[in-house]
Image 1 (cartoon, helix red, strand yellow):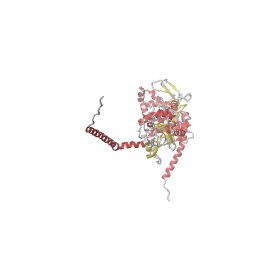
Image 2: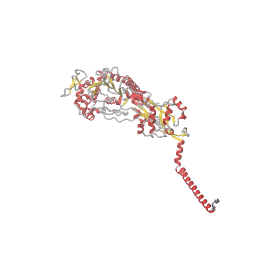
Image 3: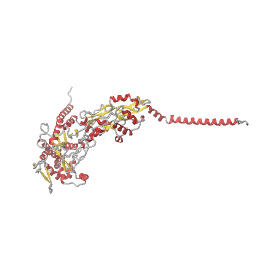
Image 4: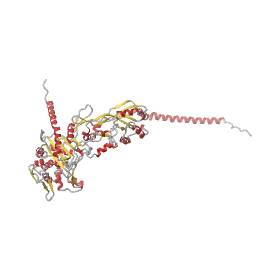
Length: 633
């Protein structure tokens, strides 16, 4: 078998091939080095700032610092809303791979409710993954200790200190001061997230909500150096947050306490106003509720119990309650007759027990069977004679009637610094047309003259009207804010005031006639004896009304007791000739305004005016001392 021969190598060809391959390899290496150099140049020069910032962000954590919420005091410096130290559990989603699993394991260490998880998930959707989200508020010391022992098993979970809101007087100021609650999705849609960085709560009701901008403050931040586990090592820089302003309200906490106690649990409302300036001295809605559970999220069962309670403790009756004013309207109607020139104080009307519209057979009855004879304005107010006001309202006509009542703010919000105020119903031709698309009838004008029919007022509206009447027709917008304090060392500065509108009474002697009628109410009329033992003359007026069902055309009781089947009210101001206080008391069930509401008003007057008189004396002595020249030395 022939042997195979190996091909002969050509040295020059091999050398040329090697040189070509070596050159190609060299060029490839050079190209790679050029690409690498260009890339290094881009990273080290063009993108240096970006990657340096990213690196710094891994080492330095910027944390927002929530501002301390402003405190709320009464007019004498009694604390109504404060901040107390607490701890919450926060989760940073970026560091959690299995969120449901983590929450399940965490619930075995620290109790976490379904409501907590629901709020956490809702808030988590509105935040970025690197932002911490509150999970559980107000941890106990035992819960903090349990978590600290097991901290290593929960990456991304931290115990964070914070200030939580507390209301030391509880239910007494729930409807006035209101409460804060955890920020939800609806709040986030309305907020500037930069201003609320690190903030977990916002005002929900009352003063807390209306003055949110003043109370909130401005957030700060701090830069913290962290390790690979994001544990803080040291603080590199810090900009302190600016705390919110402290608010001083016009409310007197002692008077508020007395006013609430006088109700003895009976459903209703009371408002006390200084008629000289519109300051609200007390406003009580009974029953009330404890606002503290709402701060960090009230349990669903507890909230449902409050929401479904038959006595409606969550309803702020002062600004949202609807009451038929009844005979409390009679002083205003009588004043309207004088101001419009339809009556003189000396004009009389014969009360026979029944009133008939000319040409009609339907009788409109007086409270006293057989009537009370011939009465003038003062007697009609004192004895609450319906016939006088039936006749007067009919002569006024509904258009002039509603126009005059509008002067005192009926049928519209008063403008108090609270959210959600109702406007009530001022009977008028336009209102009925808009509401029912029906014409107005004379009989509806007649009953409007005694505060019945379509009339609906809130206690605050009626108190505002009485305060205007007490100040001889000078309106003042009712308000709750008295002074504002910025900073810990700042002095409280008086809050700005809205300019007072023009006086609504043209002739002072007309006011004197109505005032005399209201004085006679408590001296010899429907509330006689109320003035006994009181150092000043009281001007007042009772009101008693039943609710009428327009669906069944029957009078319906609002109380289980057949005796207390009325909605009863009492309005007053004192001293009658130079009023410093105006009061309205409204009860949802009672015998009469004189029997049930008037005694409550008297206790309120007893609690305020004597102390007020002492304060007036102290203020006078202080002014005299300040004005007196210093003795020669």
